[in-house]
Length: 407
Image (cartoon, rainbow, N blue to C red):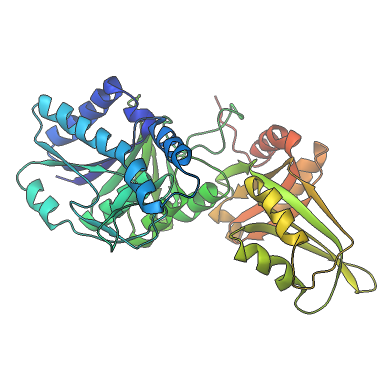
């Protein structure tokens, strides 16, 4: 007997037919003798509609009331799935964030989980009951419902799996696993049998949409084995596991891309002590996250060009912050470019192999793709290129690193 957490995303519970399909998968686990907890998202599109309602109701809305509204989608799904399971003869009960409870901090709209009390859930496991949790939500120190931020149901599922000491956390979605890159762009992309937490974290943070970044961080911290698999096909998925579970590491495991970045260049910035702080301090104060950074110092060492990237949605705000900066920031001109994409090559095998970066640069050069910015970490190399070359870059690098499927 195993203890399993099953999480179903919005597309997996988009309507009653899909909820019934999810219930059949839950029933299969129960009939196999396993203890089962289920975490559900809102039906596809529901959360967006609820957010729109809030924004239309008032421009300066209270985040506590925002949480009350947007968390209701998961409440509906958890109740419906429980009813369907009961109709199938399965002992099931829905649980909202305040009922277990899932205790969070006070940051309404983007709360972080502090603890989950599961003693009652475990007792009910002993009675053969399935617990169906409303994902994405918890209860704050003020006793009011809180939400974990967009994509928070993945985080809920991993946190509940950690609290329950589950053998596995299965994330059911509309894809059948984690691929070496986006199979919609690269038809030769391969589904991976296993991937390390670190690699998945990099893939998620660099643009891969399969798992939410916070959920991967939590899985890595608590050693929760996560499996990503399809709600609609009976196929093996991809396991996200500790590095020690993978016998032989590939040099490069996957290639991610992100079209949601924009580039800013400050030209001829006066190169004095504290200049970086005068640039990035005001951006930080305005909650604008900076990603890639490159600095080119002039030959006379009096000025420098500073290039960096921000989220495309933050571009106009970042420009205004820099133009209005009162920190004595001096530069000749500010250039911006929203038509860029970040391409990232990721693999824990990079730690022990040389020449990975050179292969990337050569492959892009052969296709005439100019590299605008470079950043690296121990298991990742990222480059910024013109957005129009995104698909060509992905295909070229996928082939160059030997990731193409053989069929």
